[in-house]
Image (cartoon, rainbow, N blue to C red):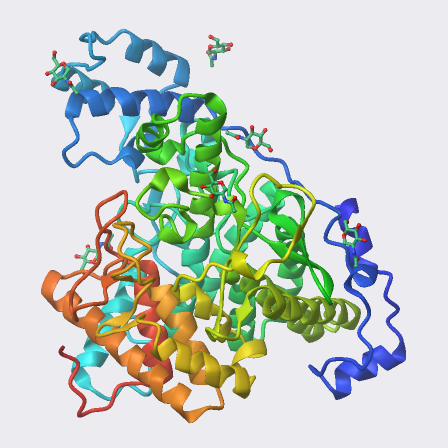
Length: 599
Ligand SMILES: *[C@@H]1O[C@H](CO)[C@@H](O)[C@H](O)[C@H]1NC(C)=O
Ligand SMILES: *[C@@H]1O[C@H](CO)[C@@H](O)[C@H](O)[C@H]1NC(C)=O
Ligand SMILES: *[C@@H]1O[C@H](CO)[C@@H](O)[C@H](O)[C@H]1NC(C)=O
Ligand SMILES: *[C@@H]1O[C@H](CO)[C@@H](O)[C@H](O)[C@H]1NC(C)=O
Ligand SMILES: *[C@@H]1O[C@H](CO)[C@@H](O)[C@H](O)[C@H]1NC(C)=O
Ligand SMILES: *[C@@H]1O[C@H](CO)[C@@H](O)[C@H](O)[C@H]1NC(C)=O
């Protein structure tokens, strides 16, 4: 903790003037901004402890290989095997495993393997047990007041009821025998996305929390945040998910948004006070080490930006055989490790996988995520700075509030300087030059990625950008002409690569950020478009739900009522963030009595 002392007692002087500044003109930029480096230096790199992949994970990967050889490819999910829990200690389990008779191709007779797994393991998912949410009521008071239509209200209540289905806590055995599980202990109950995603995920949690807030489940929402903060305490960052095999990567950083939105609904200052140190620590994580890159552009000089970069150079355990197969085209170890690192870094981006990160859109082995400065990540960090500033102000720490306001002003300039392309009316990802992972990069207009991705519009989500009506008009025109606005929602990209974060898939979080930003704009046409896109999204979710009985992880935006496909696993149901966005949209826009919700 001593490490963060400089941040908490900063070199900026909290004079009376500064105090009054925050009191009187809360969010206006100061007349003469201090240079960022004088007030806050993220380069005091914090690198928290990271547990090396456990022996258990290594063993389960071996089991995974034998299981695939023995059971065959049909319905085989690699992740299932790294989610198994040991009934006995690892040594005796390994001994029994090694004693199984094997044929020359490494397979074990199906019945023998089934018996072994049944005898030695508890099945995946048993490490998380059902937990009755303390703040759940079947019909919350004041639930979605703007939803008038009875059919839509009944559907919304069913989705609300899913919070009960998706609520879990870690089993007692996790506490008593942590080494027998790949699941990491979490102090509070939580809400999982669903299906094969049996544990807490980082960025999913933001939209789950948005839904929980619409459902008035404030304690459950706070519990999720407390869990994520416990990861920062232990690892120095929020993990991709709560598993031993996710320790070396994070996910799009939205913890500050969670804390801020919960604060806005509950006014709980104690909660904010407890969260702030973790938020500051996370800000440092994303602005130091390999995550941090400097780009030089005249006349502004050096700009500090962030990229996704997982500290991992092996196959991802939950997908190890897929990763190995992809890497098998490379002969030397260096190239294989580089690909593994790119695969894990892409998982950190949340967009796994997408043409967005591929040098050749037809070849996944050309992933180059660590050579890209992503628009959305840098917007999330700007949001983090604004959130920290606002939260610090709420608890009366004006000095901290001022520092992060400063940081946000610098980053807003940086985002417009490096990513903004006024010809296209979009913010474009930036490709770093080859082979120069260190040092300063010199900005070159040619390095902006000219392809159209929904992420090019994510800046709309935050006030710094949606409140600029002149820029907004340009962006709006560009969005309408982008090819992303489809019958049943906003497409992820215009490229059909077969990967799941590409055309024709639409994802709830993307819809939500773009629609929410448009809805908050002062431009009437932006607000009209927001509602139109929200209605399309709600219809397709509703019709797919009635057709299949499930809420889906992603949808096909070409046709109302179709869910999505593509990528490395079968489409999932449940589903945390889709449920959250439906409730958030219904809360924002309502649904009139006489408006049909069918396609
Ligand atoms: C491995 O060998 C067994 C028995 O020899 C056979 O049944 C099985 O299909 C083989 N598996 C693969 C993946 O070739
Ligand atoms: C498991 O085996 C390793 C080496 O084979 C040994 O060092 C360790 O003490 C054993 N653990 C238990 C719990 O028996
Ligand atoms: C989930 O919901 C369904 C009804 O929608 C119910 O039948 C089932 O028992 C629930 N499962 C859990 C674990 O609550
Ligand atoms: C930019 O960074 C480089 C490398 O750290 C440094 O040499 C240079 O002086 C910086 N330029 C400005 C304008 O700060
Ligand atoms: C995970 O991170 C730790 C700490 O940085 C490192 O020692 C370990 O080698 C990393 N694991 C992989 C597989 O790269
Ligand atoms: C960077 O390297 C990749 C292959 O490693 C190559 O395909 C690409 O053209 C290079 N880009 C530049 C700008 O040199």
